[in-house]
Image (cartoon, rainbow, N blue to C red):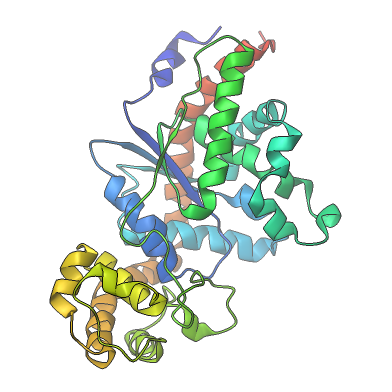
Length: 347
């Protein structure tokens, strides 16, 4: 039985959002436009928002312990500096809420081997030597499902690379409900979209912007100063044609499309409107406009991140408070899960 004082926590909000970011360092413009900016936009009366620094996912590949702690704080600082309000949203690090790992084990016993073997991310990350990959990397999607379903999240903002994992989360919820003949876990809906859900490299418009790219000119880092941002956009790969006035004109022009996409997302307008403004301009005219917009948006975020990182106790306090609030939701849901499965609760 669930304690009477915990029953209220089982109430599922009409719309509850969960999402997380790994603390693996090297934050880029892609992390901001593709994820955190969208998180901020969803932080409203319409949604209850829960955001997590997923440090347990991070250790599916070996991490330097000191760097992992700093990277965890950096992600939290990034969230806050970008506009996540810890009083409105719940912000915490995954390992501080033990229920994530506990529910993941239940889901390891619900998910099928065949489901896991179809996960393309495991194949990509494990490479040719899959037998030497960590078991945690293979079981990663079950932990991701636990992250989401532990809060009965109804919606998850995802990029293209996470859609398959969310589909698995839905499969796990459906199978659990079927196996135990109960309607308990929600079938979570993906929130896909946004003008720049996938930001591409400044050196190759067919590849995703990534911190692992050997060329620093391929990306805008969240810590880049104004001069560096101007330089990187100036050197960004483009073609010789002027910008079109309609979206069809971007077909087969990946670098042009990427820069227009970035500007549209930063200026919070549609690509149609952007092309109405800049259509006919050469890139030598457009790039400074884009760089100025990026500096205006990103510089305050970078400054606030720097301030927060100089006050580790402030970040740690925010994460601890968030973890306490997260457990108020997670604990009774795990408790009910255990009861459904048939596990005895200590008297």
